[in-house]
Image (cartoon, rainbow, N blue to C red; front, side):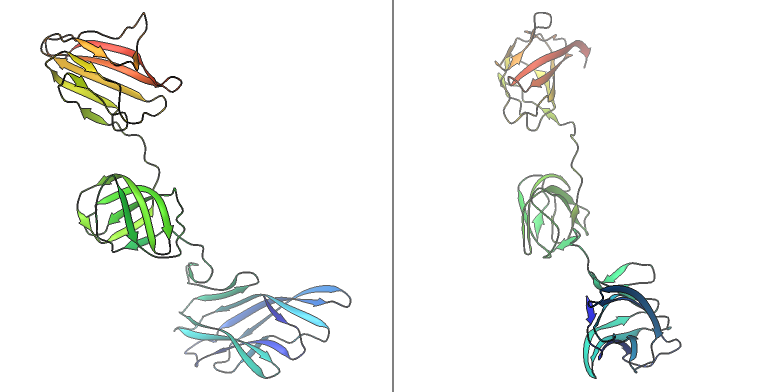
Length: 323
């Protein structure tokens, strides 16, 4: 807030040099507060610059009145840049409040509560209060990966908080990796990655917010073995493409999502015996299968994770498809 609270105090504007074509228009709004009455009187004023000569934009108030400046605007209508000086005149003692270099068509705006801001001819903010943003860069050399913790040295004062999802993209190769921020302090941004494209080591990262990754269909080819242990953390579709022996589908490793769907496809040249871990359950009408179809046909089994008892319930069986 700019307050003029004496009959000798005023607000002035001048330029640091002569204009080329046009003087700069100035508009001000203020309120007079008379504490004795009391009264509250809004008013406005306008003027134009006079080269390097100071122009009084908001005059000193009368005795017993406090004049509060609410708005001040200066537009550069000249054809070249201009340097505008805002000064406080206290009985001929001059105090420079601000000095602003304005391109042609720039507008300098002061508002009570927000201070001075400078806008270009498109209305974009060039100088002034701006909330912290997310756009960042980093020259930290890191390998692109879809797992593990990555620490970037970046700009301070950003808006990142723990739990925000980011994407770091190499400007040179297009490689990118996404993950969740685990810490941000000063110039250090650390995130645990879970998705990526490319695999190169880069040191030219653009960093910004990313949307939450959708659930993709994760297909895993399981190894032909006497015991097969799918990993729920990384698998939605398991494929045993050439089962050659009796096998046990062991209880899953990893962490399953509540009501996660899991599909198992088995292909075998001859019928093979199937055994199941204790977490797989069927019903009387739809029991767990004990053999495959053989003849190089595909058998498909669909399960859903029951969060109440951590069991995988058999939902459907499709057998005997040509593989």
